[in-house]
Length: 176
Image 1 (tube, helix red, strand yellow):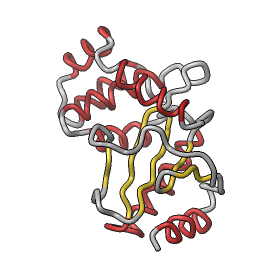
Image 2: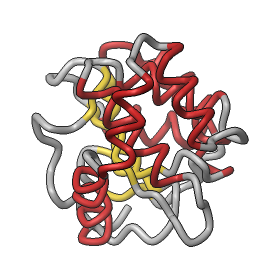
Image 3: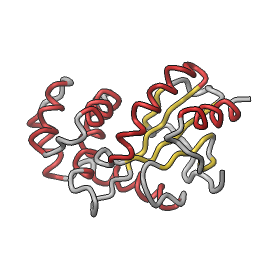
Image 4: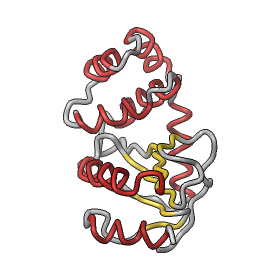
């Protein structure tokens, strides 16, 4: 592991799991990135396995040049977060990763209980664009240059996230 997380996890972050958990896993992710899509079920399984010993934090890092729908997907996730539905949208976006057009994003918003007209207005006006940029800039300061990038207790994890055994071992070691 090398490189530290900047800024540290704070109250504005989207976090699942107890704040006092011995391990905090931060992912800088892109909802359209196929590797992030591969990491999604692995992280979900780790969350289930570690339970209250793990707090998972997600930060947006849309790679707009490679993934044309990633920016709007991140903004819709933030709109959902403003209504307390970030994780529902996070999961929906990864479960429908190959269908992230604006029309589909609005369908997903409605499916989790948001007003799609309000979300469309937010997208059009860029209501959540600055919040997404804030995450992105934090990723740049933390040395993120691709997705997914993980940090365990503030330190960059450079191991094989796609090897569930190695990932679990690193998280378990960090909790002791």
